Amino acid sequence: MNQVTQAQFGMIPLQFIETDPNQPRRTFDENALLELADSIKVSGVIQPILLRTIEDSDTRLQLVAGERRYRASQLAGLTEIPGIVRQLSNAEVAIIQLVENHQRAGVPPLEEAEAMDRAMRNHGLKIDDICAELGVKRRWAYSRLQLLDLCAEARIGLNDGRLAPSTALLIARIPVASLQERAAAEVLTNNGAGSPMSYRQAKTWIEQRYTLDINRAVFSLVDAKLCKSAGSCAECPKRTANDSDKFPDITADVCTDPDCFEMKTEAHNAAEIAKAAKKKIPFYESWEQCKTERNGDLSTGFVLARSFDRIINPKHEIVPVDTLLGNDGMPKPVGIFKNQSGNITNIYSKSDIQCALENTGLARTEAQEAALDGEQQENHSVVAESEKVGAQQDAGKLKPLELQQKIGRAYNEYRLELFDEIKNAISQSNIFAIYRILAKVSFAIVEEYEGWALAEKAADIYDFPFDDEKAVDEAMNQASDADICCTYMDFVLSGYVMVHFSYIVDGEFKEPNDLMRVVTSALLQLAILCGVDREAIRKKYLDPVLSHATEDSAPAEEKAGDALSAVKKKQPARPKQAAKKDAIDPADAWPFPKSKDGA
Image (tube, rainbow, N blue to C red; front, side, top):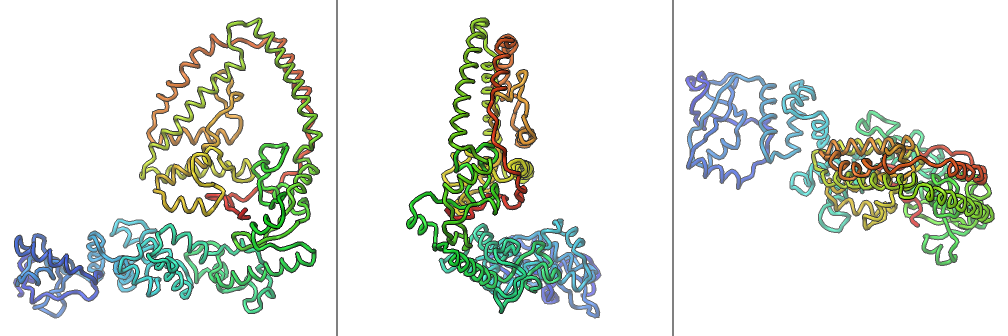
């Protein structure tokens, strides 16, 4: 045996080999071993196994790598196996086994995590050492190690294939053991419906049920009397912000006790209902009950201002009325109800909100609207007369306005085809880069409009309402990653792709504001990223129009200019606008708008 030990390569008798009790791989597929044994009977063992000497033993060798080949050789009836013998330390063995198993298919994730943990605890290896040896990112390594926090039921589900590693990781991140066990049971049975939840279903369920943003609570966080048994949230140990050492993986301020959270929410709602009863404001169990008992003329404060008449500033049309008017400016509620989220919401008379908008100068009154219509009719007559004069003097030539419109249409055709080509070129490899570009546009939209602008074109394309949270989730759960990326692009950009002819200056499109500049820049970046030939599309639509722009254009007549100047001077004064409210936090609108009222 000494000869074999000293020689670095040779045929090693199987009787002198012992397996390593710390081998990361603990489970072996019996059918796969039998197939390998059949192959070995025919062709032998092609790749040698790796062994090391055992201290104080001249007759025993320890198996380092190749246990499947060793086991299959035993099944095949062999008495010896080709092997390489090396002098290795325990730390070197741990690294070799980690790398060897990481490169093999079918190694259970938990066994790999346990091997990484042993290497760190027993041999002083750091996470960066393991990442370098395995060629993985730190995020992957930390995620693998976090699987060790799984409860017993989730571990069983992961090992038998009912839970994917990504889904198991969602459960492992729940910091309270009892809640993790409950979540595992719900995910594995789909709340009793049968087969386990998909990753997206589990992610949505766990986020909504087990990671509650405490700063969005409707109840007071410092009220110790709301539920005396629970006390105040200010110093609660189940609040992640109060014990960062216990919850190192959770950076948000999260409540980890959903039962307590729900109990406090219900107590708060009961108090709100009691307050409303004292003011003789009726309570309705649902919006449907409210609509049934009250005939029309109903609204909530979360409804967008575009639902009301004669709004003066177009930007305000996509802002909720309670944001525009503020708590002091809202009329007295005509009732309250429990919305889809289980929170108490005020019900208002729609006509009362209309009056409030008019009283604060955010909407015109019917009389102001009629006066404005009359002056606009007069202005149209002046413009028509000026156009008639211009037509007589420049017969056969395109008027400046017509030329702008023609170029504007060409730009729209160019940008729409560019937009469609980009969507057609989306692939798995460029999805994240596209998201980064769209995220910047999303933030620009939020800053510009103090809210989330729903793209009307996107709403027309898809057969589900974008402002319905459940409908969006349901559609996205069934969609591929590329389809989700296309949907997000439609949602963010489609409402801003079209340009108005008034933005055409000297034959070129000039962005009228910072938002359009951001959108245009994003469109061009996406075209480059997706390999779309924008120059070819530009030549197709813009070159034919722009080449004739100079010969078709003609300077506007002074007389027509004077008439139009007069129209501008006669524009009626607008009522004073209400003071601008605080901008909406962009995080509240990300990635899709939330339906607050369920109406």
